[in-house]
Image 1: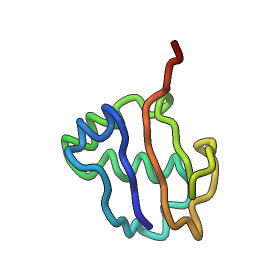
Image 2: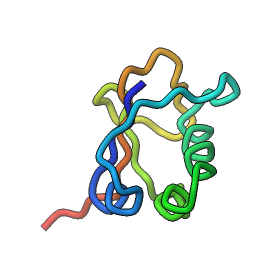
Image 3: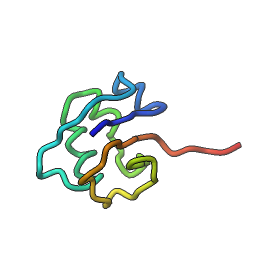
Amino acid sequence: MKALYFAWVRERIGRTEEALTPPNTVRTVSDLIAWLAGRGEEYAYAFENPRIIRTAIDRAHVKHDAPIAGAREIAFFPPMTGG
């Protein structure tokens, strides 16, 4: 699957996208965020407060308990404000 990173998530990780192959034990968005946070300092910093991270699977917004099986693209971004 392809991971896309936006705004300060992208800035903290230092890349806009990457191909991911998480282990089979990673089944939900929450699992994926935890797995990513363990990949290094930049990921830990980007996902230090996972509750505020917003996620979309194949361009549809999802909650953190959403399954990732079959996802082609997962996007991570911070909360947006209007104005």
